[in-house]
Image (cartoon, rainbow, N blue to C red; front, side):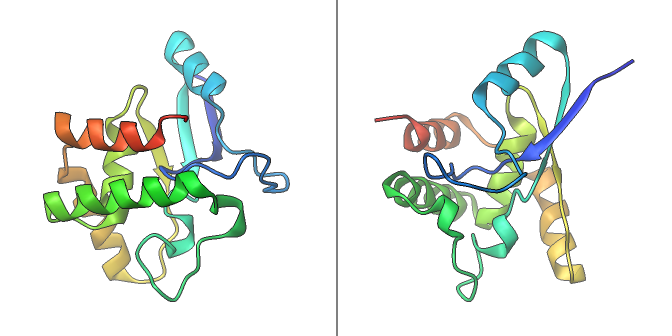
Length: 139
């Protein structure tokens, strides 16, 4: 038997105390548990309903805090450096992490699917990981 856990997760962290209703944001303790117990993690809403790349989609309130500004800047810096979209960087970050987290995507256009599939070819390098990790570090 193989265990799998699915929760809300993305690169930008939620505001402390943010209420997502029944949708719990993937806590660090579950990620650590998955590493030790060889549990597969799946994440829904990894692209936060398009708000990472679409100017017409405002970032939901639950993600708005000072740390998010820093995280989005790092995300966009890596995207520019790699010639990728912020969405692709988030997906590569999830898939390339320890443990790898399987993103659960919903798309409404073929171009969105193509963009997501292209993220499979994006392998983040040491500088990318350092940039992204530093921005997520707790003050």
